[in-house]
Length: 489
Picture 1 (cartoon, rainbow, N blue to C red):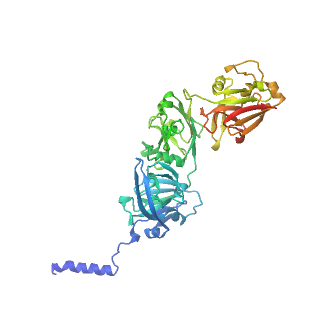
Picture 2: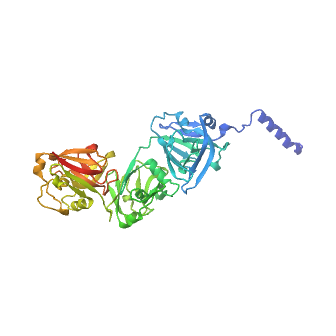
Picture 3: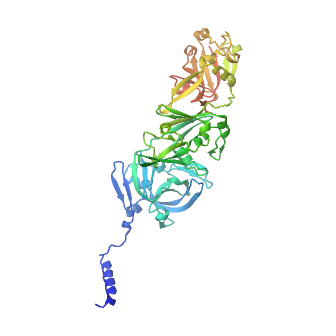
């Protein structure tokens, strides 16, 4: 056979086979799809054709990097992520979503985050609140600028937030190379109490916003090997959480660490729901990036025996890594000056009416016979420790017994005769809210105190300077921000 005609013959045969359908041609169906694993581990495979046929959304979106740089906005098109979920489940159920990338990376979204409740930022990277289903849509993106996204741009699929006004969201929510979606049980809501010169609570969204803050790099991680496995914890420095309650200036929604207070000295107590706590000095905690409040382990929420937050540090033995953190307090503040006064009104004999100043209160409470501590169960069953003076000791200052003086020249002996005859005590708050007690209920009662500290720190602004605390009292009876105490018949 003439060798010159071999190639044309084979080419002719190839063309005939193509026209007859013998050779499989590339199709959209051969492109990567998405595997969705349901709550009961059932597997649902979505082809690209099926994904494209689901309700689509188009819009712009940008993200804020931990360095503070804003990437975008870019124009995207994709499947409304909730539409994908609705095809296999009821969205009224509680759930979370684990997005698994083809390179093994995993990221978990809470139900609220799936529905668009994530921090938003302006063009300068400053926080402007949270999004929602009306203006932010979590989208399974498959097109950017009208073209199918590629691996170079995080494809063939990526999860990101878009909307009509090009919302700017945290970059860590933009999961690239998405290949599998696992529907999990919902992430339980949680909060951590912070108590210092001010009072605050940290919830998951607040925590995420701080950890992945764009203006200041607050994201820390620590990695170590355990049993041949690499364990990576991620979270924020402990000192950043302290900056929320240490009285530092708040500049453009970022709390500034109070170095002056830390230099004066205080203790930091990290409480666990297991009933234990760890105490560290401000010398140890001040701007120490090796003390990390971690809320993520290997890109997932902490396991149940550590959830929701764990204090970790390469500088501490692991037995001191506090699990299940529920509260953090700044206590034993050196050189902190209280400056307040409370009116004490005796309507039975006005000659005994007087004023209780912070200085005088502290003089009396320095006596160990008068100083009382009560542990009061608060939300989630966690006990808070309050310190103060029994109410009857405060009453003894202006009840007219006049049998001697103690600290600050105050009358310190309680007038039991007057109390037995019966009178009413009215405790009045700064907003004029009040509650009344019977004198017979306070006689030598050390379980009813006028407190000035909670977990070793001054009361927060909503409750300071003093608050009635008592075993068995209901919330409305525990009057806060006391401005006056009266006795009358």
